[in-house]
Image 1 (tube, rainbow, N blue to C red):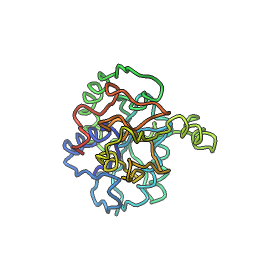
Image 2 (image 1 turned 120 degrees about the vertical axis):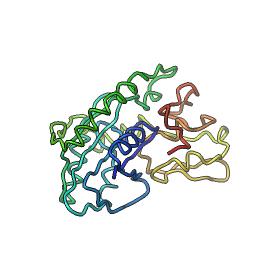
Image 3 (image 1 turned 90 degrees about the vertical axis):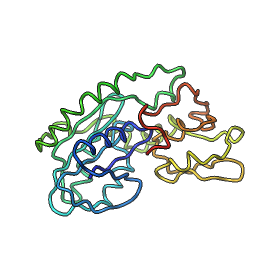
Length: 247
């Protein structure tokens, strides 16, 4: 089984391609705990703040792996992977397991609207990532053992501190423009942590955001704001092969 977490579709695309090539089933971590009896188990996720999202490491604690499966992880991000695999490995070790293999794929970063507009997304990264999949699949089929990417990161260490978490929340602070919100409910359905709810006037945002930014990029009216700014329609991103309604 391949367990995945996705915001704007990059990790879902990779997970679905790997599942097809390896003849494994897909499991969205937001769907809750499962028992995975497959001899090969994958974890695919994006990198936030130089680390694996807390939602992912927390969700792994709810999974059960009878026996000793071959465990691999694939991280997607715009640039580096930081301490992402170290965090995944630590979560697995609490369950008596460990990562045998880790790989990183550079893809389009969905966080760019926090700093600028009129973005020319690097879609060529998606082509490069897809071309890397056959070699990645073969390594998994060969049960490759390579833990070289399991290491720490100064960035991740900083964002784990109270100051780092506070700065991260301020940098990516999301809001709702009630005047634009039409209460279609798409963002509520997409939110993996149930942080959004439909109110009388507009969508209400809670305090458990995991910063996947799916709501920001999916809103048809650009009613979700980031740092008190509206995202431009042209800057809303999702993986070209993964519409928000298809995962």
